[in-house]
Length: 109
Image (cartoon, rainbow, N blue to C red; front, side, top):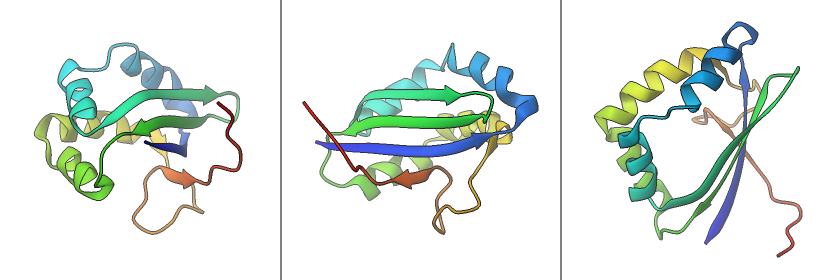
């Protein structure tokens, strides 16, 4: 299992819409998340900075392949098309990232 942490900004005028969307995530999106070996997935919002922190545990063996599978799913693409206009990626993210990957610096079980 691999723990993953990511960060992303939200446009101030879209915060409430994003929160509303995630109060009722589409069931097929949730099924795809699970099918791609992601468990224990949470997104946190830090106001007033409007930063999202995403945490999940990846239980698969090929993260790139699972993320490609998710990205190819038509329902997931529709969900992203609804959510992405709310989001504001960090200017310091790596090329090809939307959510900026974070380094784990501490963990305790």
